[in-house]
Length: 263
Image (cartoon, rainbow, N blue to C red; front, side, top):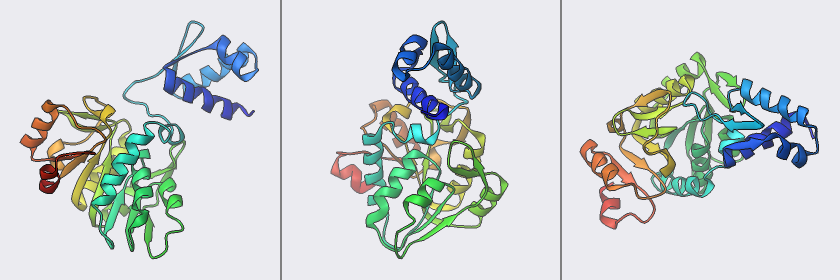
């Protein structure tokens, strides 16, 4: 097994269990404890872990984010539910903006039942996912590839995004705070998302239930800037009341029919 493969597996274990032990990892992978310590040092240098006595703990600092291949395996059922709701809002022939996130990747998968869509995205993963869709137009923003994310970022990606106007955009986030709004962990991603919001008629925030009440490093925008929030579970009464005050619809599986019609 290559060192990179082993570190990715350690990272997945960290994401699931929040901590790892050197001796256990040594036995699991059949390598020396010194090799595992070097792996943990590399993960610490990359910002994903913090070494502790005999092992390491997951770095949950708001300024760091897991690589896409890790995030795409987390909360899969929740993202599938969000994807199905998002796809139900899209009509054949719509122009859609999708950001470079694991949640929007699941939306892209769910959209395959639609026809003649135009997709603008800075996600290489989404471009690959939709590469065989006949009758569709898939537009890459261009830009600079960010290591570990399969995302195109930077001035070129931002300028390209600004040159299009979409019917709908689906914006992911790392956290939603009642006062601070939608937040992300990396400024370069935030810059793209802000432009997508300004260049779409309908704006949807897509976030599973674990994102509610969480903060991250960068503010994307206020909650009132969205037409609706799409999530996988019914939020608390406090959140539903806040959304009513902000005049933002909330869409989730099993929502009352009258609320669905209002949205």
